[in-house]
Image (cartoon, rainbow over all chains, first blue to last red):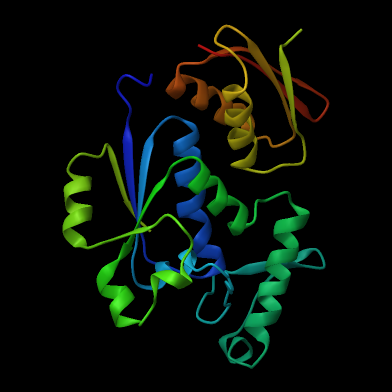
Length: 162
Length: 74
């Protein structure tokens, strides 16, 4: 199996709590299945590399977000979703559900990714644009740009954009 | 009797697979790992995990709501 390892790259562009899951779930699972994984974090995805994670989920403009409430599933009208405090409340609800259902936290998945040697590239341009500093990020990511990903992608069996 | 047992009951995807991988790293080739899980997705996932990694899925069964897998490390 290890003689001919498969490889996967994931471009990570989103930084909300819900969208943080797919890239980290796929990266950690692939790594557990002996796949060489590289994650390329760009734009809001860079949020997921910060030492202190403060990820939020927002029902605003998301008609598919139907949270279970007293036995039924309810979508939130935008006019409610835009009120102050609604995102914070939705985030608390989501985090409670995550705990209750035995779903891993993003912190745990990220640690698992680092421990299983998932390579991480932080987009230099976005770091610059958003005035982020490598000191604010976890240990491990290296700086790179589009060419780094293209080079990698030409050699990868799986390339995902999330 | 498996050489090692992993209790992954109550854990959801992808934790049973991640924990199983860790446990497999701790046993020697030829030894077996028993995994107990309650995530119904684990049935398809452990089969897929073994197909891709080359480890052998020796048993896959269910008692009540607990799934049981025995994996032999290659």
